[in-house]
Length: 338
Image 1 (spheres, rainbow, N blue to C red):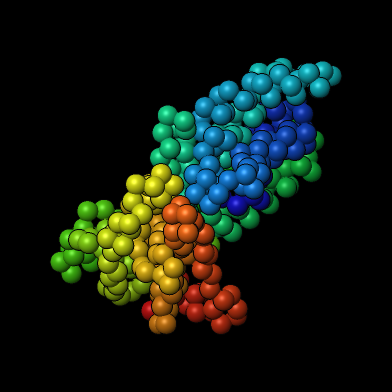
Image 2: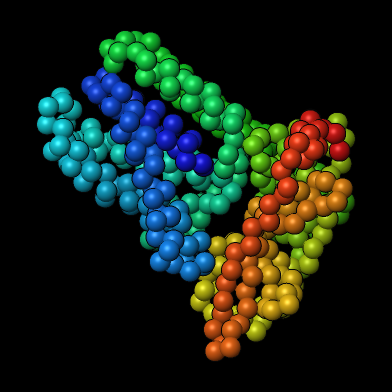
């Protein structure tokens, strides 16, 4: 999730652990704990494109990191806060739950989180919430912000904080229900249209959990479709794109390429480029393909061979032109206007 959301979640968790003893200091340190895992991006200048994709949400987002680092930080914070009544184990729990809730929330998004690193580099992803969702973050932020205006011994402080946690958790549960409802429609359409498939990834489109996108792994390629929970017409129009795996044949065996394909979980297509090929990461889908003029994939990786025979990689981010007309069209589609 975005940085603000993780700060809010961390602050709320910090309040649960040490709010009665530290007051607003628990919100501050909880917010810091919720931020620490995302500091893995500081390693980006030292890594190439594949290294960045592979390292992000790995070490600092793993259960192992939470188990090992949390007590060390707990001891360190207690040493520099000798006057407060908390013990180092409580400080350790603040960081532990700040790290773990951060990683678990990230696992709800599309990118995936390497929870079991270094034993597994698989990105655990539930695909039930977009990386930025105002309906999750803003009410939560409001309650956590209000919490800070009450004394640590005031009962209203805990009521506000737990209300924020309850509402945000309820929204996550709703997102799983919305995903299940969308999946049911996607599967019915696949069956009715006679489309054979082995698996699929459904995920919410940006900023909501009402309008859903699906990418279906079929025979030799992938199908893409969209469905809003407000659609009266439950017919899903699928577009098809061949995978073109054969275009990668000259480059296969390269460790960085193999890791890149592993990151996509096999959800990729290949198209020729003027130099080398483009690999489309289908996990994020064609979020603009609901428009009549269609749209490109969100994440595309340009791969080519340089003069000395080694492979070069470059990430290409396709972003729509965000203007008033776009948001108007997007809102209409979310509300079921095809």
